[in-house]
Every structure is written in structure tokens, then in C-alpha cells.
Image (tube, rainbow, N blue to C red):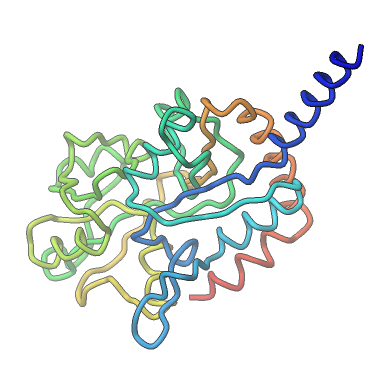
Length: 261
């Protein structure tokens, strides 16, 4: 009986320890301002700090859900693989600021949206003084489009075969537009414009934004490894807190501090 009681006690302790274990989250080291980025201090990025609207909102959400967490910035493709491989070599249980993607649902649990952005592109004003002639998403395929390696373009109805994704960052892709190597870069509008708001503008002179009015807003989420034994429970707890904090004004209060450009 004592042996059985000890075994039960150890089992309860094990479950409690697992539920209290810190969630390790990764995100893109290239930054996604004003949602996640290393702040610029004395003219250089301070890599010891991570700030942004999504960072603050996730802290509020996870705090409300009673979940301890850490966040670390990695190369984006490595971040996705770390979470996909969680439990068998991957060190991170979740990644943040991931746009909605049906393919990802096969290997990750997806939370409710933590924010939305406007979909669009950035083009050379010198080459296209009146912008690109776009009446539907498919019209974009008439042009030579650039993107970023590892990013999701499902919302634009594009695959990697439809655009040049050799650039490792959005800044590199924008420079291709400036150099005339691409007609435009597909991107959410706010994170690119937001680079200037944190003192690190990445949009070259003469490159302009064009919003896709015919597209729905692009939603961004937290993705949790399906290989995590507590993954589904984490998702459900996070979803409940997202609903609560988007409904009580916390979300608006946090994001209005950063989206003031």
C-alpha cells in the first residue's frame, strides 16, 4: 500500500511538474517590427532585449493563462524545425508570429489570432508610377515577384515556384526591387513600414507600399508542437486568454502603443 501510495504521489508530482514547465518559444531573428524585434540602442540592435506588440501581448496572454514562457530569436527556418522536432531533438515547444497556413496544421496546433495585418506588396515607383495593375490575387503572377526564404505565401495563392525566395530577409528582398531584379515584394504592410518606427528603416527610397484591398487581413498565431504531450491543452488555455484579452481592451491598449505610424 505504501509503495502504491508513493507511486501515485510521484505520478501526481510528475503531472504537476509537466504542467508547470516553462514553454520555450522561438521567433524570427530577422525581426518583425513592430511586433517582435531587438530594440535599436546607440545605433545598433540590442540582442539581449526582445520587444514588440506581439511580445507584450503574448506575455499578457500567457500570464493570464498561468503559463511561464521564454522567447528566443533564431533563423526562421531553424525555429520552425525546432518546434516540429520538439521531443526528438527540437528544443522549442512553440513559435510565434506565424501566419495562417493549412500545411502547418499537420504538425502544429494553432492558436486563435494574436493580431492581423494588411496584405500587399512593395514596388518600385520609378518602374510602376501608378502601382501594379492588380484586381485579384492571381494578377500578381503576371509580375516577377520576390519573397523571403521560409515565409508563408499561401494567403497570396503563391508557392515557392511562383516567386523568387532567395532573399533571407525582407530587407534583402526590398533591395532586389530597388535594383530592378524583382517587380515587387509580397509582404504584410505594417511590419515593413514599422521598421522605421523602431529606428531601423528597411524600405529603400523610391519603393512604395500597395495594399491588396481585395484580400482579407492576414492573421498571425502561436504554433505549438503536436509532438508536445501537453500541446492541445496549452492551445486551449492560450485560446481562452486570447479571447479574454482581445475582448476586454488589453489587446487594443498594447497594440496602439506600437502601431502609431
